[in-house]
Image (cartoon, rainbow, N blue to C red; front, side, top):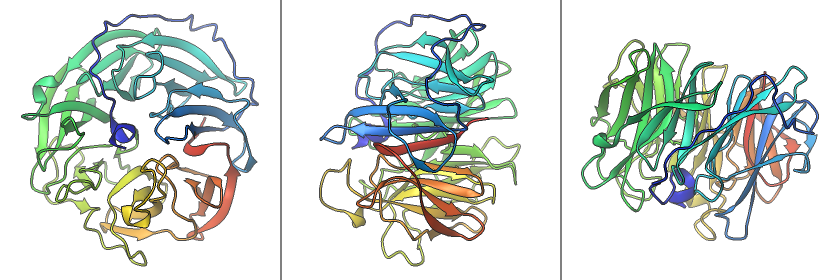
Length: 404
């Protein structure tokens, strides 16, 4: 299960090749109707560990859709939506062509291909941060590298090799990233051959994007969390507009190694060190009206009300069956200021593929797959309750993003 959660298996050895398209003549418009939301679903094989992802744009979060008008994509990493830009990464396990495909939403609302960039095979590409129209950063888990590339020409610029930051007997893997004040904060995953951490500490690498150099590594040992960011969740590290601080979701051991807890840490506004006075330990959280322990936060999203909404795992909910398909994910609301977690009732637990969390139209949409249905359930922010299934989908609802 660890493979699907955060990492590929093989260190890539291939050299990088480049390709690009004419930016003025986008091609291959998606045949689907123009839409305001990007929907990604996973259609898995019987083993639950393999399959195909599909993404498409839809106009409304209601009714039902199939995948007949969707584009296929490799499983593992949902498309990265940054404004009008959509980046589709290779299959996280390396079973598809190792190419980043750059799409944009045109004036008619269609999703059109802008260009491609070949990357090393089995690189474990997981996250992209867009700094400008000419500068973007890609984290490659299996290579220990953050690559800068030009998203307009789709050509590589340089590598930032972070392998020297590896802890003893493990390898370092750059995860999710966020940009603040010209500095790129890169969550570092440190894990062994079983994808487990060895040290109870969270780490972040900082790259100066103006000077184009590695600045430093920061480490938090006080709070004994580890595995900084879930690399396939682009929102697992974010800047909170309310206080200007960076918050990051630490995965710990995904609940499999006793004592290696998960939780949220903070880097204050204007600072480049962890906040020694802030932690929200998810593994030890007491959640009212929920009589089970939480293991980790699978997908997180800061909402307009200042709260963080997440799909959280609790293995106690389904201890038997296929680990990829076990229904252990539940929606929760996190108050960063009060450092508390609240359970959101009204929907049955979901499997680990269906963990979408997003906001639109005064609602939080949770991707859920259970005995009732596959689709997006709406949580009304004003009423503070689940109002029912909004959009039924084919496959497991892995992502919903608002398109401009």
